[in-house]
Length: 156
Length: 85
Image 1 (cartoon, chains in turn blue, green):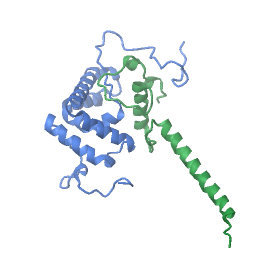
Image 2 (cartoon, chains in turn cyan, yellow):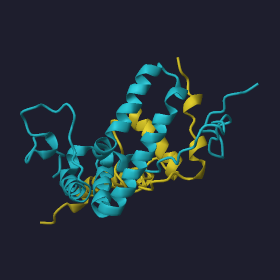
Image 3 (cartoon, chains in turn blue, orange):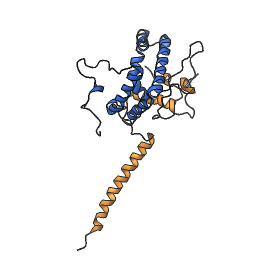
């Protein structure tokens, strides 16, 4: 018989009583937290496009079964880890500046355009990756390239 | 003619008490958020990410760019114990 133990009530962190069996290959999980991931998001989209699309299409056809897409999921994790490692090697200061700015501004992109421009330039020069926003309107400049946007923070 | 400066003492007291209460509240909120401003408009996605940050760093506002996760990370998720329909 098993009872549900609320994860907030224990002194030790929650430990899953039913981890993955050993016949499933293991992948090193990504240790980046939310602000660096948000900063690197569009570059992960550019660098890992095929693996991400593979995983999403696989999930689309699996109707909720987690075991169906484990291999594609491992590939996604490895690609994102690869990119974070490369970003740290090449553009560490600008990357740190951007995600620290995001952390001070409720993780909103519009508040941190200046560090973002520096990071985008560094990523383009060193790794050849550009940030493109999928679904942005065709004829107009994308919002991250607009010189004087309408919506900004209250204090500039 | 002497100015009735004693009459201004209550105003000074009120102003200083508002200032002290506001400052203490702000300091308390910042201290709970590791010196950063409070997160607002948090939706379910942000809650999930902050819970993941807590599993990775020990605090909901802790951040790191480490490409590898710490030791017990793979088994510390209580996602599958949450109520589902």
